Length: 170
Image (cartoon, rainbow, N blue to C red; front, side, top):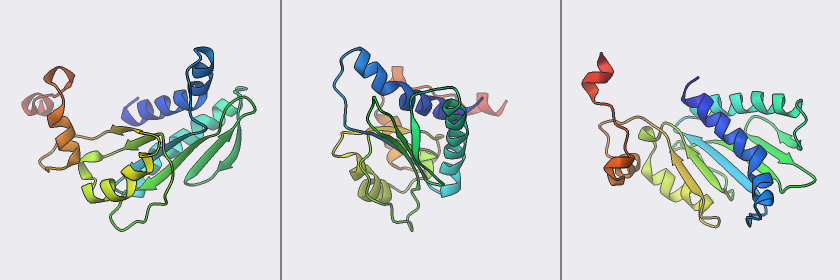
């Protein structure tokens, strides 16, 4: 299991257990929980999204409390009698695409080293402004100075996990 499996497992945990845990511990919540998965090319975001769809179908058959209101190529909307709706959107962060305006609680950027800062700042980040969305940046270090590189540079040394190049090549 690699990065994609880990991301998908985390998303499933959030979709299935966020609201029940908030209810159990009396934590105030939002009226919905929306997740956006973004990558520079749609095919990159689609691999996580397709795996997510597969695992959610398995969860559906295991008796979890939800039904699908939408389950298509770029949107999964889950409904429940007890909990607010949860939605996952799969979108491209390509400079030529026009992202639809959504309200997101969690924004996942995959292949962050290849994202265009202008697209993130003008089209994607505003989708999380109303909810103070958490942003998750996933990628590999590189030579390009971009927002992802800035985030890495701003982290305290104790929070960085960097493998030296010569050890990676071996």
